Image (cartoon, rainbow, N blue to C red; front, side, top):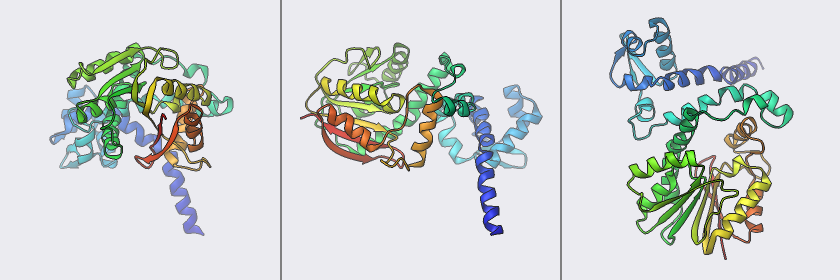
Length: 330
């Protein structure tokens, strides 16, 4: 019994102190610290480069050693493989933008108790994102989206389709990846004007300006156009309430041609709302950030597409927390 108590206490301590580890990562990432650690470097040199105190720099670097993000020998520090691959800004697998976005959510999560009590974010926590925060969020979506798009291409055959609509497509990660794999495919992306600016940058880098069009506006109200045989809702439905999602799915169905495919990718929970754990946690993320967002059950997603006149196509498990619901237009 004593051993069980100690194990329980250790587990609770890990949960209660999780924010300390996150803040070490947030602080180092925001400063671009890992860019300086691709070669062995002293704490004093890093402090001088960043204008930090030698004492604070040494402590932060040692904290990163404790997280296994940085290695250390004879007073020199350098990136562990995970940092080299994912935290150096020039790395192919760079995840710094999404980590910066998660860091911006710190204050909202600190008011979780108020959000739970009133069922919505506190008014003080609903300020508009700054330009820096918006850019971190959109490019953070690209950090994960590039990897997710590759996974989708391995699980779902897109060869039959010709014109894709990406709803709330953010940085354009999915159409870029899909078009690079399928030269016959075209895409249209709809999002807010300030997001479209970032998407245009990403599309230009990929040299796909002649195959991707943009619609600036609100995907719940702006005309989506028509004639699409492939429509993607990736990580959109969790931002909206149930009724808004039903309307959005109907709008997608109306914009599709017969034989078209709708793909709803999100953190879909089981019908008992007992898992996956990440999806249950993410519902709380929506509670502190949105008025009506949530993570939805398999049953909910099926009901939206059936009500819109679409035929069930089945679920595809992309990762332990991410699933895709496929529905076809008769």
